[in-house]
Amino acid sequence: MFFHNIELVKKGVLDGKIAYVGPEIAHISIYDFCNINCIMCWDHNPFQNPFEIYNRRKTWKILRFSTLKGLFDELQSLKTSTISLVGAGEPLLHPEIKKILIYLKSKGFNIAITTNGMLLKGELLEIIKDLPLNLKVSLHGGDFDTWKIVHPKLKRRHFNQLVKALKELSKRENISICFQNAISKANFRNVDKIIELAAEVGAREVSFHFVDIFEKIKFLKLEKEDMPVLRQSLEKGLEILKNSKIECNFESLMERTIEKEESSFSTKDFYYKNPCIIGWVYTVIISNGDVYSCCGSRYYLGNIHKESFQSIWNSENYQLFREKAKNICLSKKPIEKTPCWDCTMYNISKGYLEL
Ligand code: SF4
Image (cartoon, rainbow, N blue to C red; front, side, top):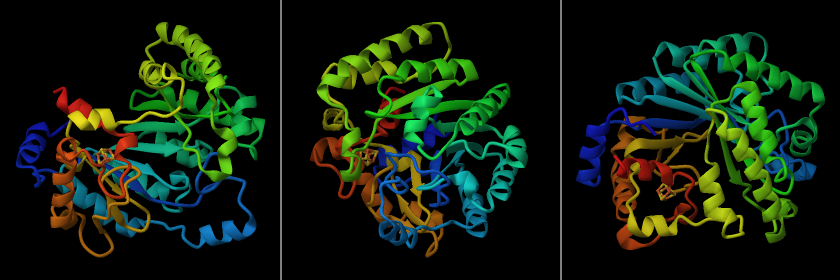
């Protein structure tokens, strides 16, 4: 991660509580509805009965442009550099997405969008082409047959259209494409094909992580005996990577999980020795307006429908959180309601400490 305001971030970390500049990245979940049903999705997997779907739908929310506009203005005044649009659903499905993207561009933010890519077409694709954009495509399959297992309702034409759009976008200097892949029983033999496709479409980065297993998708959990097959596919992928400029978290994945022959990894060892500085550089705002520190945390810090982001960012609550996170290596305890021992964001603290 590149820190634009490093001196002010350092000043805050030294203080231990206060932030002297806003978050470098604001991760904003703008919309909970989705247009497809990936098999490993917590919210939209196709294994739910109509009653479950009905109950879930009642909880889905949207952050309207009128709210987002004020939030973006505040974040700009706090010197935030990147707005990352995500969702429990598909952010490009947001009914006001064109307005949102045009406004973000006019404010000079770097933009990141995590998407399934199904709406990369027509007028929206034309708007996207001109954005300073890191497009994170949740792909999960390097050929149609594997991609289809993860996206059972989609057809070959959808896959072909996605590949075509990505080839078009990758030609633009202002756009970098990253493939994000959750590895499971559905696609563990296909890692090399995912890397091959990344090279074919001109993606700059590929990242892999293991699927979060919950009750309904227990059948997707990789077993010990699957690991040699996964390793083989990773090794084939490594050959492709050698001849390309694609960045990949490949080696750390191999080292952290495959060698241990298990698909889980704990960040406990890292945080037993190092502080977490996430509270000075990152923030998460979800579709109901709640603010959290990092992905997966439910340690409540405030709500943008009740007070301004600026006042939440330096509230007593946020300061207490920062203190706890910085001292995690002393307390040796995960923060309440936060997955610190299974932290997907430890690279941010690691990057800061290496500066
Ligand atoms: S989950 Fe990770 S980033 Fe979040 S507070 Fe815990 S250690 Fe820090």
